[in-house]
Amino acid sequence: MKKLLIILALFCLAVRTSAQTHACCNTDAITEFANLTNREDFRMVHKDPLPYTYTGAAGTDISFPAPDGTPAHGFLFKAKKPTNKFLLVYQEWYGLNDYIKKESEKLYDDLSGTVNVLAVDLYDKYVATNREDAAKKVRAVSHDRLDAIMQAALDYAGKSARIATIGWCFGGGMALQSGLKNGSQNVGVVMYYGAPERNVDRLKTLNAPVLAVFADKDDGLDSSLVQAFEKNMQAAGKKLTIKHYNAGHGFANPSNPIYDSEATKDAYKHAIAFLRKQLL
Image (cartoon, rainbow, N blue to C red; front, side):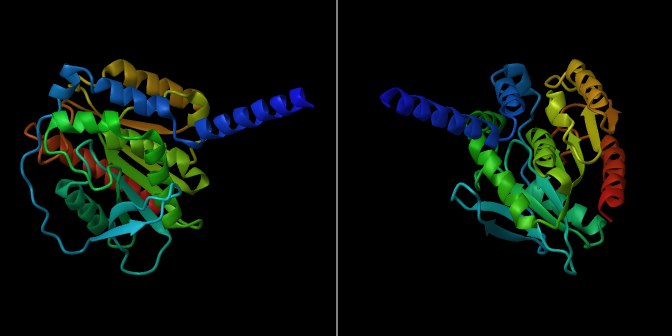
C-alpha cells in the first residue's frame, strides 16, 4: 500500500510539472531573446531612445484580470462602435512607453476607429529609458507572468473576438507568441525584427498568416535566423510574407537615433494593408 501511495504521488507530481511546463508560452523563444541581451554587440545596436511625450487624448489606461491573480495593464483605444475586432500591440523592450502609445493611436486611426486597439503592457508599468535597463528587464521578466499577461489580453478581448497582433523588437517575438496563444481567434501577426519561433510543431498551430519585417543591417538577429524562420514556416505549411529593409535594428521607431523614415513608411504601408485585410 505504501509503495502504491508513493507511485501515485510521483505520478501526480509529474502531471503537475508537465502542466506547469506547457502552460506557459514557448520559453525557448523568450529565453533566446533574453540570452541575446547578454551580448554587448546586441545591446549596442539598440540606441537609447530620444525623449518623447505622448499628447494624444483618445487612449485610456486600463487594468484587467490575469489568471495568476495580478491584474494586467494596457493602453486602450476603444472602437467607435461595439465590435469583436481587436489589435493587440506589443511593446519594444523598453516597455509600454509614450512612443508605443503614439504608434497604437496611429494604427487605431488608420483602421478608421473600427477596431479595438490594445497596447499590452508586458512589464507591469515599468518603462526603461536606456538599453542597459531594458536588457536587465528582459532577462528578469518572468516567463509565467508574460504568459499570464498574454492570456489576460485574450480573455479581455473575449471568446468571440477576432484578434490580430503587432510588435517590434522584443514585442515582435511576443506578437508571434501571442498569435500562437490566441489559437483559432488569431487572424494575423505582424512582427518587426522580432525573434522567430523555431518549433515547427508550434508553428503548425498558427491560425493565420504572418507578415515579418526584418532589417538587413540588424547585428542582433542575423540572416540565418530569418532564413530558418522562412524554412520552418514552409515546413509548417503556413503563409509567411517577409519584407527586407536596408536599415538597422529599430529603424521604425521615431525615437531611435537610427530611425529610417523611408523604410518605416514602406514597411508601415504593408503592415496596415495586411491588418486591414485580416481585420476589416
